[in-house]
Amino acid sequence: MITRREYLKRSSLAACGLALARTLPAEPGNSHIEGRDSLKARAHNRGLLAGCAVNAANLREDAFTKVLAAQYNLVVAENAMKFGPLRPTPDTFNFADADALVAFAQHHKMKIRGHNFVWHEQLPAWFAGTATKENAKKILTDHIHTVAGRYKGKIHSWDVVNEAINISDGRPDSLRKSSWLELIGPEYLELAYRTARQADPKAKLTYNEYGIEDQSESDSAKRAATLALLKRLKAANVPLDALGIQSHIKAGALQTFGNGLRELIAGAQSLGLEVYFTELDVNDDAIPDSAPAARDRIVADVYHDYLAIAFESTATKAVLTWGLTDAHTWLNGIKSHREKLPNRPQRPLPFDADYKPTPAFFAMRDAFDKAPHR
Ligand code: XIL
Image 1 (cartoon, rainbow, N blue to C red):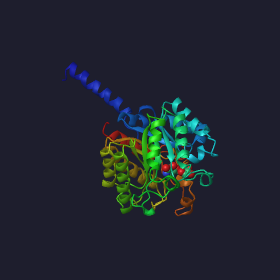
Image 2 (image 1 turned 60 degrees about the horizontal axis):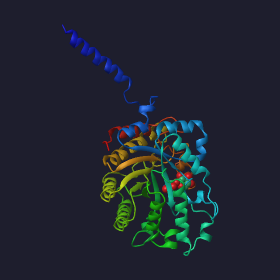
Image 3 (image 1 turned 135 degrees about the horizontal axis):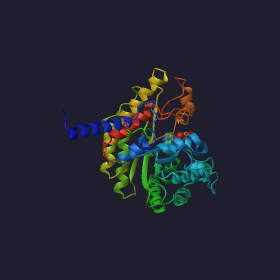
Image 4 (image 1 turned 180 degrees about the horizontal axis):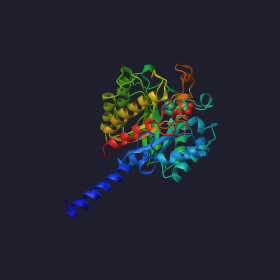
């Protein structure tokens, strides 16, 4: 015989159990992926931001904007804020796409990353014939003042300099022999960061780089060179707030992540920097099995294992995938990627081409759930 009190306690526990069962974490195929089950809600629970890269043209598609707004609280322009796309001629700016993304993000209360001011790629055709050692500093500072100034106060973080290290260029400081380096000298970095701070004092100023986190010799060397660069900049009191780790990673035994990634995050943290995972996608070319389900499983495991390490440190504040769905990934657009075997479209992102969540979605969400609070 149980007491009435005990009976009530047990039945309320049972009711609770039922309610719990209804809200258990969603599994692949489960439609409960919005609201508190969305990526952004689960990230937010842990003090993290979840985002993705967007091309402005896609903002005209309802299916795209619906998933984007439901899942993410951070966006970055995949191309629209780069030097080339913004600068059709030396004297004009084309802000249409960048403005459209900023307006969309503000309307949906999403944060915005700016990408980027200084890069060796996507410079406009006029640059080579117009920029000289005499005018390059002015071109750089005018550009930063105009662009950062336009979006002042609206940007969470700016990738001020992108991919400045290239060890194979053979310089003792490991800097890439980019047009900016050749025209201005190594002080282009300091100039860019100081100008950006002046133009938008609230944006977190980021250094963004790739190929610095795995265990290989080349990544280890580039990691050391990157941390050494960040240390030099900090020692010179250059305004620098964060390291962006691009995270274009590969599935299928090509890369191993572990202490290299930990070392990188710890190195950035010891310099007082935040860490953002800025361009995550998982290249699946090296997976022998072509069946989508088999590839998706392996890609999802890479997401999970990589992010588990990424989130161990409270220095990590944000993760963004490079594109919303497999229909939008740059990995299927690059000629060199298309031409090599295997000849099959990649499936590198948390949504497939039909906007359905892939196993990578659930792996990423699970990694958010397991992340320590920050
Ligand atoms: C890529 C875009 O995804 C492509 O659409 C474009 O054609 C080339 O640039 N590292 C970066 C990004 O910092 O800006 C790059 O984006 C991908 C590699």
